[in-house]
Length: 207
Image 1 (cartoon, rainbow, N blue to C red):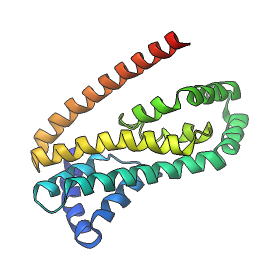
Image 2 (image 1 turned 90 degrees about the horizontal axis):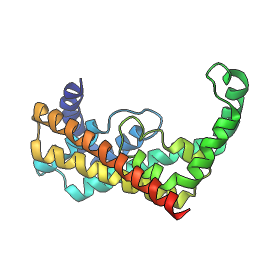
Image 3 (image 1 turned 90 degrees about the vertical axis):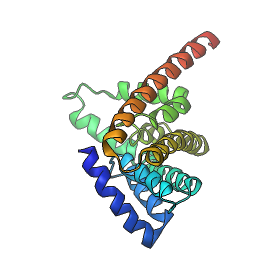
């Protein structure tokens, strides 16, 4: 399924680039990071293909991807910051017992994020299925905007760089892309877990 998405997105992005340029990447990554999450692979890998074809510059494609990721993340962050608490309180009151969620557990998760929000935001941007939603607890816990933006950009930058490079190396060979992307994803998850473990051990020793 990813192969089909990837193949179609190449031509889509080519057409989009002709009319919108790097702004097309920015728009798609903004959407990907906010209210309509979809795999960032279908945007940034084709961007790497365009770099390989000489139709884009690696650096500008990367910057567009990072800026789009941060913009999308800020949408979710602001929604959670200004509307999240009221909505969460209503849901807990109405449905909390059904899903075994209490206000105490929500407050506990918010306190955790206040204490470890930087590493959580950074690592969260690297893990598929989590990167789009890590902005919500950041908003709930009122994480500093500058800190949130920095760690979001850092994580999104690393992931976008990898995806562009994969597209640049393997072009339109979807079989090789999928095989290598799977290995890269598992490697990133393993490294991320190791970073979290080291971080928690460091914090425990420091405290």
